[in-house]
Image 1 (tube, rainbow, N blue to C red):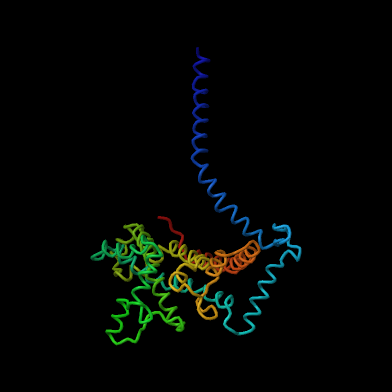
Image 2: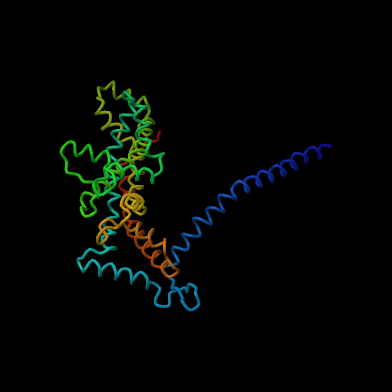
Length: 328
């Protein structure tokens, strides 16, 4: 009886373990399959395509490239250098530098979001209202936001004049809506839109970081006579540096995906690619690409990622150096 009694729990435990494992496997099967099909396979394919060539006779990819393992990279580098040497308005050359507008936009957003986030964390009057205002652009479709922004700034070239254009003219401005020939004006409008919509989620995240600061630290500082602004500079900002570091790293990574805003706002590269970005070019190429073009797209993408990678590591290194060793 004792032997049976001792064995019963063991058998029951094994049955329960099998059911638990089966449940976990079934639970993870769908996301793992989705991850493999939509992330792992495309990324493996992206890394292998630049080293391949498309055989038009047999209609298949040939690996390795018969013209040389790094042939596709050499051709793209030669093309880029040739465009730069001509000192003319060239699509790829301009797109490379335009892509870094994304980093400049995020560096402008950071101090603004930090100040606003601190004010909201300190429960300024109307805090809940301002939280809704700042977060609203994040819950509305990017397509809708771009259309609304474009509508507000339409001028005489359109069937109607936008409300912001009317207000600017009322105050004596000669603003006439979107002028694709005015590069400076167009980039200014893109900056305004990206800052307007980019503040939303960053204000919420930074505000939450300020609110996680232990109250005893803040109370101790107030007893020592630290002012509202002194608390922000000497205590708040240093203690949320991990969040700011994450923001900086994500800002550099965002350079690789800077295409949606200019694409929806402008829908045209402009003369000589004045407004083009590398991700925008890649996006457009994929819309009408054939099998051989995919090799070019993958090559440009990998080359640009290799260029961006040191900047990501630099942002991470600087952030870690500036981040105090605190946990809360």
